Amino acid sequence: MESPSQGLFFGGRRSSVVPLVYQSFDWAHGTYVGATMNSETTAAASGKRGVLRADPFAMKPFLGYHAGNHLNHWLNVGAKGDATKIPKIFHVNWFRKSINGNFLWPGFGENIRVLKWIFERCDNAEAIADVTPIGYVPKIQSIDRTGLNIDEETMKELLRVDETDWLSDFPRHKEFFSTLGNKLPDGISKQMDAQYQRLIASKSGRTSLH
Image (cartoon, rainbow, N blue to C red; front, side, top):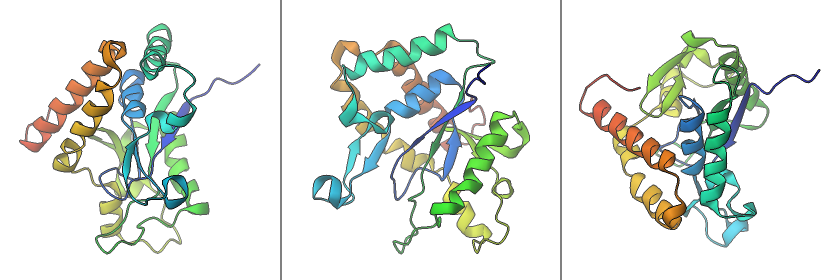
């Protein structure tokens, strides 16, 4: 008998804004997370480095049909699935940089430390995350740093969620969604509005995030 998948994750390339790892609130929110991914280009990919481009599900060049239909399919999968069994959705970002332009996370084999947190979340270890406007973010002590030369201040920056930075991303999201026309699912528009309101509430000091 095959074991069902407990989780899946997307990976984007962002030097700022997006934390090292976070978990969506649920499947529909996770679909929105995938839909609003922006990645910074590399010279190999486009001839220009560091330009943000919409990259839904980290596979924009490989979508075989209309992106709006693709998003609707994802939402339908969640709507038809058992909420207690459907996989949890995560986003990882190995590429966050310091103000000096240095990568904050060592990457490569050390990424298993982040995957360990993801596995623990899939086992419903609710106590090892903070609730933020964008989803569940690890507590600093939740990422195993044994033998790793990363101090607490660096971890704070890796996991930081700045409401102003995230709000600045919304014009890009709206610009991409406008290209989908009437095929943009209502469920995605609702998720965008909900995330916007959570960010505004958090920025103003109100505590209702989810």
